[in-house]
Image (cartoon, rainbow, N blue to C red; front, side, top):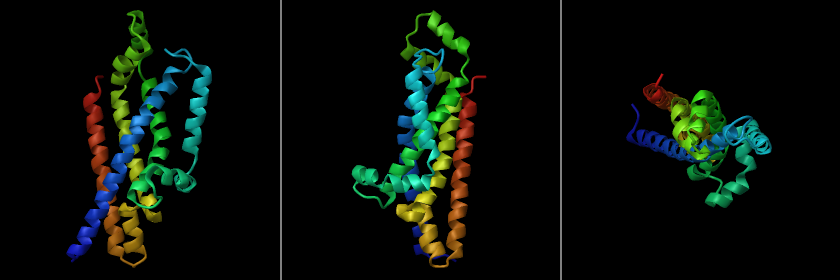
Length: 218
């Protein structure tokens, strides 16, 4: 039977993971959605066609997605220290998590927006809608189910990344699994962290799928 202390440590690690992932998802959505929208609307034959800008944005996003997370986390340590004052801990881990997620979100948003029927966009243009009105009242609402699924996928991915960040001092369940499970030969702690992570992912995925189905007008 686990002691009260063990349960307390597990609960604290879970809260750290939720905090770390929650803030990272919010920030990546805040920056990733506008970036994804720009990737679409500046593309060929779209409402704000800008070939050069589109190519530059696409290149930046591709570079961001190409760097493995563990390398990115180490490479931006100076930036992390500049932003939060330290490179160790739960708050510090949110910086590389957010940086890694922004281009990922941008591509998911781009994919969701490209599924919107061009006929709907052309109809809005014919009625005199401005590009901003088309983005706000046509593109984003029509793509909402895909956007919700994209946020869900991002959240699940960041849970995995957060465990990796925890392995190098980022806190959360990953840190607990290494310090208490692996280094102290506590197999039960290792199993517990895996079970908790699986349960969290299942809850998030189920909630995201349900929300997307409710938003789907088809």
